[in-house]
Length: 131
Image: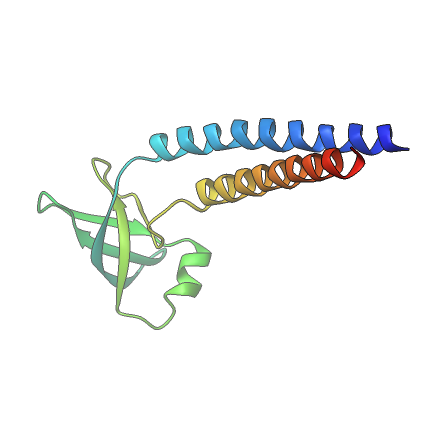
C-alpha cells in the first residue's frame, strides 16, 4: 500500500512540474506573439453593419474596428470606451489589457506547478514519517 501511495505522489509531482513548466513556456511564447497593446480612449458609434469604435493611435492616425457581439454587450449604451489597440496593426482592438488565452495558460500552469509542489511536500512528509 505504501509503494502505491509513493508512486501516485511521484506521478503527481512529475506531471505537475513537467506539464506546468511546458504550459508556462507556451504562455510565454503566446505573450510574446501577442505583441504590445496600448491604451486609448475610443468613440463608440453606430454604423450600417453594427457598432464601431474609432480611436487615434500613437502616430496620430485614425483607426476603427467593428465590435463583436460580446464587445457590443460590454459597451451597451456607451458613447466612449477605454480600449487597447495593437501597436503597429491597423484596426486591432480589445477591451482588456492582456490576452484572455495567455492569462488562462498562465493560471493553468501555476495550478499544475502548485500540484507538483503539494506532491513534493507530501512525498517529503511521507519520507520522514515512515523513517
